[in-house]
Image (cartoon, rainbow over all chains, first blue to last red; front, side, top):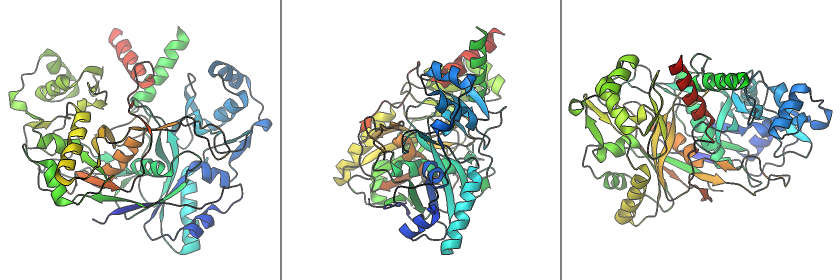
Length: 254
Length: 254
């Protein structure tokens, strides 16, 4: 097995709406076939103008209500509601499912790393976004790379955020070991590994979060794998979603 | 920033109880100061003899009851109960909190990658285990490395297992950005990053799970960071634990 190298893409300028992000990246680092290019969704959304001016948002009654309860700006809450397909928790923070399947706090709407009075949204079609970056890089360089777009999320049981994949292209989200055997010839107990999130998480570690942060990372030398893209639980499987939803419903009854 | 390299430690023999794991590792790869040595808990536990023979386990009434309900071997379930400090879910699988703070399915008790009739337990003191590996490696090589011991766990909302840290030494679990500012001078919204799990996850990806798996990985070239080791939520913070526990209690009432 070859060693894997992880390269932060340094020297990118501050990204603005309309920037050709793919060209800025390929101008900053020579890419190789098979490279996994990991891009923070914030920087992708900024380049694509996927942001909102709070001053243009008229909060509705639900936004006013939740904003008062959680101590937030009603216009920010309206942006979160607009980005959500279904609310799972309303307090102490909004947790919601997005159309793409991702579940995140405040729908991933972010007021960091952008000018005052603006918010960054997650890409509305992150899978399409990843595929587009892959195509653009191939058009610019001839290289067939793989792409992951990340969001930073909390988890159950454990404190602290980690990077998660919300869009990917050129590889499957899950490495599927079903039918494989262990060192003793038994069928494996653990058969589906969410490798896309393991890669997204490490890239997030290399990116950092503060003003020294680097929003794009290249992971080089990863083998290919076989699997599938069925990353999100369906409702029946998702014990946490079910428990959170039923607790919220019970509290409303009381 | 230097590139980071991730090196699988290849050529390790099948690990058996009593093996000097640290010596086997340092004989296989020259380590450098600052390297992060990531070890799958299964292989650590096997070397330390932290396994149980199912034939020596006498299941109690609760183990018999849960085994019948979940279709498992009552002796295996007894091993899970013995390893658990508190049950959070009893079905469709046991989810429990361990003394070390980690919450995992079936308490991390594993019947893969071991001979029939035996199970591998998680190290009972994974923090102590990581510190001991760090010391042993320093004694053998003079190198001051960092150590992570991993388990493979499911998550909320998303299908597939990922690697998580259960023990670590020589670095903090959380990188703490509190007080740092973003590119626009605002205080950061995301302030605590669980870098230890981001590293553990990627190492797990590089390890693989099947009979070609490599249970030890070296991550080289990571910067240091400041933070804290308060990785596990306390009960009040842990919305998922609270919701799962209250749902289980409600189902019992019905």
